[in-house]
Image (tube, rainbow, N blue to C red; front, side, top):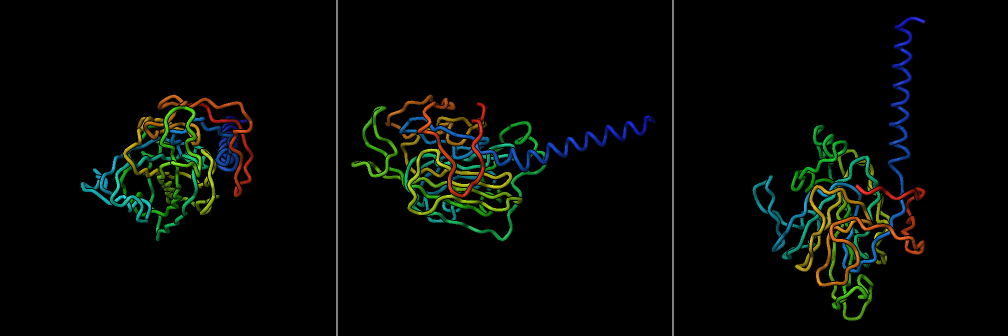
Length: 294
C-alpha cells in the first residue's frame, strides 16, 4: 500500500471519528438530563441554568445603566412586560454554551403567576466567533449585558410568586407556598433565544406550584437566562465568571433568612432519593449522573 493511500485512510478514519463525536455531542450529550438535588436552604436563590455567570447588575427606580449604550434603560425591556417598573433589585445573567446542560430550573419554590412569550422578527446572534470560542472552549466569561440581542431576541418569561417567612433561622419554612405571615415577592426567569435556537420548550403554566430546582424548560443550542429579582433584601453570593450549575449552585440569597448551604459555592448533593428532582412533563430525556463541580 502506497504512502498516499495510507494517508488517505488515516484522514478518512479521523474524519469519521470527528463526525461520530459531533453526532454524539449534538444528539446525545446535548440532551442529557442529570439528576439535580437542590440544597435545603430556605434563603437560597439557585442558578436557573448551567453556564457562566456573566453579570450581576443592580437596578434602581426600574432602570439600569448599560455601559455599551451609554445610558439607562427600563428593566421592563428585558421581560417585555411591565415587571420591575419603578422597583429596585438585581439582574443576574447566565450564558449556556452548547456544552452545558440546556434544561432550565426553578431558582426558588413558588407559584407560576404567568408565562409570557415575546416573539421577535429576527433573532440576532449573541456572540461573534472569538467570543464563542472564549465562552465555549476557554470557559472565559464575557459581559453581554445590554447588547442588541439582549433586548430584541425572542424570549420566554416565567414569573414566579415567592412567599418568604419573616422569621429567621434554619428551621424557617422558606419558600413554602401559603405560609401564614409570609412576605410575597416575585422573580422573573427570562429565557432568551440565540439566532440558531429552534424553540424554547416550556414545561410549566400559570398556577403550577414549583419546587426549588424543578425543571422549567429546555432551550436548543446556545442561549441565555436572566433572573430579575426586585427587592433590597437580596445578597449576591456567586461571582461573575463563575461556572454555575442549575438547581445546585446558590447564586443569591434573601438576607435575614435561615441558611444551611455554603455561601457562593455549589452545595453537595444529598442522598435522600425523595428529594431528587425528577423529569417534568415535556421531556423524555433519561436522568443521568450529576454534573461535576466546575
